[in-house]
Length: 340
Image (cartoon, rainbow, N blue to C red; front, side, top):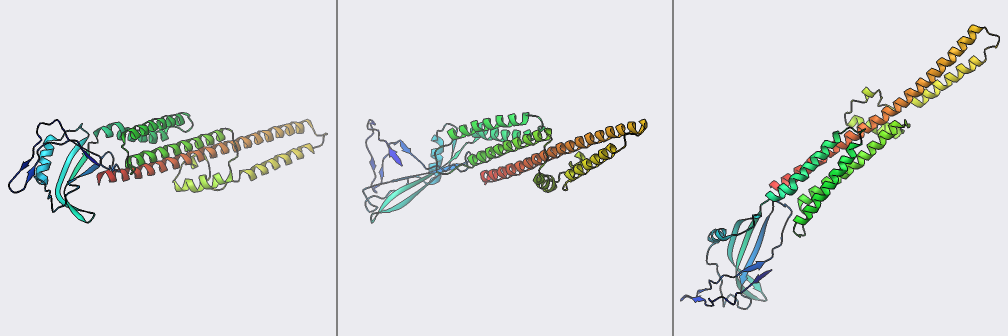
């Protein structure tokens, strides 16, 4: 779309006609043009605007239009008078004559192709670098101790700050039919942040279960403590005294309880006419069996706690490795698109 504004108050209303038929009108005309923008590589994008000058009435048999200067001369003159606000650089101007076929007739036109490049300094300082810093901080927050409640609050604060950056990006981007790769990058990073927050909630829930000494389900032992821990090369389970194979705590507990009950039944069958020493031995045996039962129960609860704690560590490492892989791939793709 192009609109030419004529200045009717200009004192120079004359044109020059040469003997060879050349017509020259040196009066400057301000032109307002709208170009379709492609912001896919924003803020490292370049735009091309096309301007076509010709007659709507006279065909090429009546008027033949040709540029007065070639492309290099037009670019040199335009470079001297090019004025901007520091956000665009004039790269090139291509000028050529062209014929347009409309309604069975050819019209002579002059075609201008103007190439502009955006200066990305402001966008890098105000948008790209803060987004990268927030992603790095979110990765660093994964190393906060899982038993403390500071990690979840820190991640939520970073997510709110990233949402503010998305609002700034929405205000800075012009309207276009193509989505910028920077917007896709921010959306993917925000999605990964949200998923890491969900993972942090799951880890906190597992730590709560470890404090309540709840029985660990069999699928947690199989898929997390066995397969996932092996896949992630998790070697700290042995330090916690946990076997990756399927444990048999319930059967051991039942056998210990049966042994304790059998011993108690045997002690009750002792005759009441036993000597005083036998009664003392009986009471001592009861105390020993009670201590054994308490120690067994305490050991089982400690094993449950250790299993939940180990499952939380495995999930935490899985989220960290997945986070690093996704962010690395996204960074590599965005940098490759910006560089090419």
